[in-house]
Length: 346
Image 1 (tube, rainbow, N blue to C red):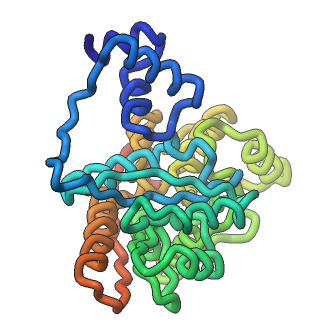
Image 2: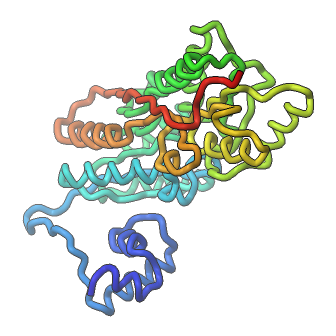
Image 3: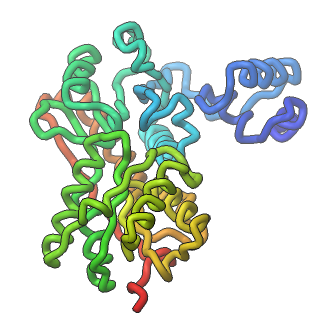
């Protein structure tokens, strides 16, 4: 009996079987139970390397705080987090640790954070800090304890380990690219849910434009949901409202994340506006979908693998050495030019 056979019997994909057998999120509890029951009945044993009897497998926790804005309940299926988690798991295995997943529903914060703090099965915790503010991280660190690293955000004044993105640099790279192409009428699509990363990106992009004597005019500032890959009626309405006033769309648009950028490309296409011939679109994150959309998306590459490695290494080192001094790391970005950007039309 192979994993493919279990998948066929359960009527699911091989990936779903892997998620169930490894205790990962991403599938419903009913599907997980059905897969586990079929595996048990079929006598299927996954090929895993068992630790030696005198060396029990150690574990780290990946602690996620879900809400309806940025980090959804199905966060494991969101492209950016899916890629990041894969890299964290790889690094944990290299270091001899298993990775456990713990979710805190922000609607039941007090209850869930108490349960997470009382769970002593993991030796250290990596907190996904994408959607967390400074006060929230301060409270979480106080409850979880010293063996903690916060990933994907950074607050300079907190005595906590952080590994984050150099958001300012990435957005500056995007702004410089747009200016070097010769664009002067530049738009900005912000997330309608605000987080620290987006605020830093806005600062970096504005600085790049200022260096070229430019700025984003208020009528060319738009907003969109940060977690949708499809076109959005709200965004289309904003574009149409601008056109109805007798104004022109910007010749280039920077979006605070790839989700928004892909939505912008699809929305512009539905309005009969070609990308990049009429409007250049630039995103941020370089999720896998950025290479699938047509045209392929010009974007800012986030070194997710490097961030994952640093977070795991920093946590393990702090646990093993007992070092009390905290470390803050920002990982630089890399600009990726693809087909969604070009010089403005004459």
